[in-house]
Length: 210
Ligand code: PRP
Ligand code: URA
Image 1 (cartoon, rainbow, N blue to C red):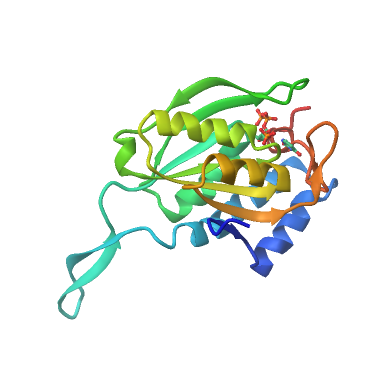
Image 2: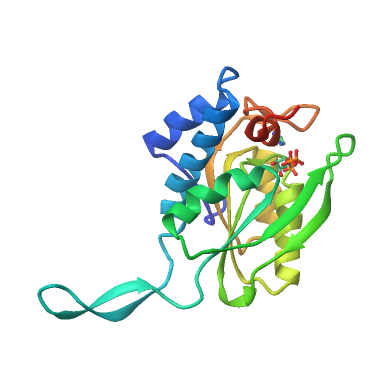
């Protein structure tokens, strides 16, 4: 496994992923769980955000104390399902800017198609966290990161809740510079390129569509 991949091992994340997978978990609870897991994963993924010492005054005295430095974070959800992870991260970093990349998988070829891309500027100065609950074949994540690099993005992280080995291999091969944070590494893809055991279609479960 690439040294740029971190698989989460926190019991709270494991517990919430189990609840997420359950076919009896309804839309409202599913959305809440996706957001909570994103926040817990964000705590790990943002460990290396740069800090700078700033001058403040406490009720006792003047002092220097660390704050997040420079142009802050950009969070980039892959539409649609990635939207479900944004709130969890903005709870941690309310000043983060948000970009959007619209991709959908062709149901027959399973290849991603782009329909939207809008990123905050200056993208090249920001730490960019691309979020999508599912890394299946890896086509969507890899293509989204290609777009971000074409727009000038440099320091890129990718966060997903569930990954298939096939997608993780593709992503780390095509983007060895990207740090990847995975909630759980599942067994395999099925013939329809769905993750097994997985949780089904993340977008449909978040938005209550079919
Ligand atoms: C899902 C998921 C990922 C993609 C993963 O989105 O949210 O974006 O599939 O599959 P891949 O790794 O094989 O590319 P989908 O295309 O179903 O679109 P949606 O979010 O609009 O439902
Ligand atoms: N997209 C999903 O939402 N789920 C999968 O299992 C694979 C791709």
